[in-house]
Length: 457
Ligand code: PLP
Image 1: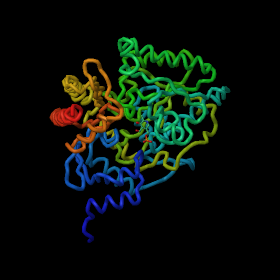
Image 2: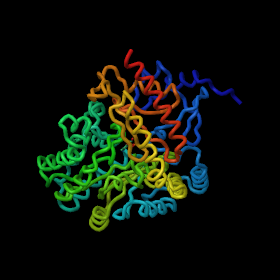
Image 3: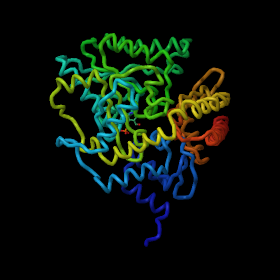
């Protein structure tokens, strides 16, 4: 057997051949990637033997934690029995059927049907095709505009990135595609605080931006509104409690379809099965991915509410859309095992009643830190905003990139947090315990102290 390759050898091969997503290729080649070799529970180990607490669940996905044998066994068994068969030829596989049935049980009652994909991006692409098809079938093809929000993240395909509101993504490749427009995000700190609005009053104002956009576009032209219950990649922006119920009221008033992107919030992250349940609204469609398999294998999909399903099924004829891997049997078998485990370990209740409130308490203490302007959590999503002047809430100059400074300390201290501007965000695995939250928060506090020391230099 060959000797294992050294980290340096692997890094050289990495930079010679592997173009990483959302990465400055040359910048990474200069530094060399950290190479993650194995994982267990909420911890990772790199090829240099460092142990790292993964406070981001991989990329918001490893909800049941690493090393869950039930998922590995489900994949192995299904690979041996039937590694692949498609769902195009008027055929189906047992795991795909059973997962569709199980999803109808764990999602809100309006959802009885699912369209499978392999990722969040593909799911949101499906949304664009599906909502436009819905209005077509109803004889209103002009109803094609989809409203989304600035700083939203809905994926990286042409439609996903267009639905998203990331300036950097729109700047590359001529996005957004036609018919997708954006309103401001419900971020109180940036848009409500200086106007002296309470969070609740601001939530209503932010929802009314949607009404203004519907009216200026012409309600007869608007197909749907899409949003993440809590914006994840945008920096864990937790909207005021007034926001979503008002958004729902406005969508209903104008007949606009309401789409919840549950790619991050789904499968227990917020302390309910789905983020829309936590935020108090009933969407017509929901997209999901990540947590459905805890990231062990790729799978995504769209839950189609009865309003849309009835039209597509009873009047739509053939829907000319689908992916080779729609309903992939191995991915569906893993998802079934994953959902089974979430239920068996009572992870949704664990987040809602135990570790979610415990994290909220710990974050309330971190809010006292001199570097922290605001600390927020919902379930097991959390954000700390780093500020220059705590009393006034003044931001650091962008050029200092304090978020990245803090992220660098996290990296060295052995905890993975993500920086979105100066918002430091976390979304740890749902299996995390109180003791592990103490450990994570102690590491975060240490990184804040180190960052503060840099800030005053
Ligand atoms: N939607 C949301 C809310 C996401 O956070 C993501 C990914 O982070 C996506 C969609 C895209 O998912 P994927 O990367 O699986 O295509």
